[in-house]
Image 1 (tube, rainbow, N blue to C red):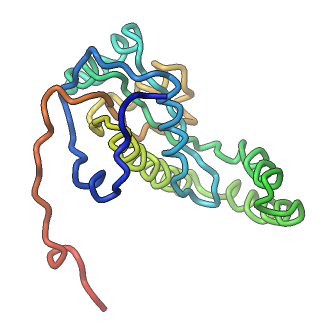
Image 2 (image 1 turned 135 degrees about the vertical axis):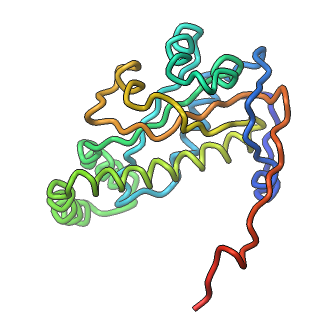
Length: 212
């Protein structure tokens, strides 16, 4: 368990989150705590609870060196962070459907007959879904878990930066993921800030919302 004091106030977590690009490279995150943060992040919702997110935690010097040329405009984050989490969306998410629903039954969340009914109803729909629709679905779900991970990290006392500018067509294969199956979503650097992230302005809700 980390010695970092968790921030419990949700509004404090929201308001203190910043995109940080320079980290204290001496700060490491244990695999135990990283696992805990990912577990907390994966409480995020997903379509039919299919959980299509997949993660590669890039933390070793060798793996970071492999990532660096693929994220060359974000080298500071790669080199100084405790880790970079590569988030992917799995287009073959139904491969895990039986496991997910069976676990729900074993935990008492649903009876066996409901599990069977739901799988019989949903799996043919997913199998018939066009690739672009599947892609859109995993982009949404993996985006939700990514945002939740950044908030969880802040609650654990860490800072993050979501990175969209990297060689997406190369990153899956570089880290042993099937590029035809795994859609790159984003990279998320995580660590302790060496330089504070800047505050940023937000449009007023009146500029972004219509009431009907």
